Image (cartoon, rainbow, N blue to C red):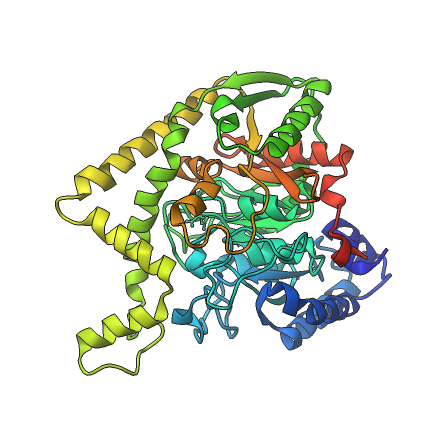
Length: 488
Ligand code: GLN
């Protein structure tokens, strides 16, 4: 089979058997990428020379008998992860020339496992967005339909995977940014339990919500990536002491007896009928294999979007204050005094969505409004968390759609922030609670657009979610489909 169509598991097998070298694999994907980059715009930076060097190193390790399952496997990182010597832009003019002096922990761990970095992936500016249209480097296109968005903010990661440009990518999920683009592009992505994957070296958006995770073609491949990515990191104060896990070893369990909760609130008004049908079919799949389907209630989830759009901007306004043109970031030419330097640099460096978030965040944190907005949102966050706690006393996993609709057209929502924010209606509660969730493909619309479903679990149920997702993918074809133009 063509190398670009193979998943991590089969590539690792081919490398081990010496059917091809890591360098051949890397060169094949780099050539494909060079052809496809222009129409998709999935990459911000391609690091071809570095990739070849890393591939040669991997071949040397393979020759010595090292058979780490990720050794020699190409990937690319969302451009929010700091990479030593390679610019990290966060898809912002503010950081267009920023070269970090160190690697993010995620980058370092995957590098140590022997993965080969092809480059840095496009995203919404500072991970703020649901369509990849806020990127300073231009939107990414959805390989299933080039007139549509790939989702965001990890849109470059999802589009590159769907277009078979690479078998693995990293993403980050603050309010759905791994799962929503995974759903729009027909790939698989895990938002891990908060604290399992280090945030060190990930440019901070909303620190109490941000979590890095793997994106790939299957749950089994995500498990391999998690084996390397997860683990305690003393450099991240919110890293959990028991963050590590053996995710791959957890695969292979059956479905019988699994208690699956279906939340009424995720099947209400606004849900596209084709998405609803595909997710219902997945529920039937599990029921037919002996799972118990139970109805659960998440009554406060209807407030998740409004809660998030108070808390995330509040944290962002604080995190982004470091980009002042002095310590970090773009420096304006217009600078007659210090105040003008700050104002002008930030005005020029940040795009409109980022500026909107900073304004909202500063407002909800300001004296006089703090109690009405920020404190209230924290209280609602506690209620949302409590909803999940109650639900997970009754069920093992919760299943629902990842997004209310399939991928929308470029330009459709970019002038209406609220309708854009509603694209995250099913993903955000998970971040507010800190629990893990896996998005995986479960069908297609009549027009041929991918549909994603989401499995949510209790704290540290990441292994269970991957195992349930893997069981589903062993018997369903959805995750193996590739967009016609990009497949063969
Ligand atoms: N779309 C959401 C936002 O704009 C989520 C982003 C994310 O998860 N990084 O904030």
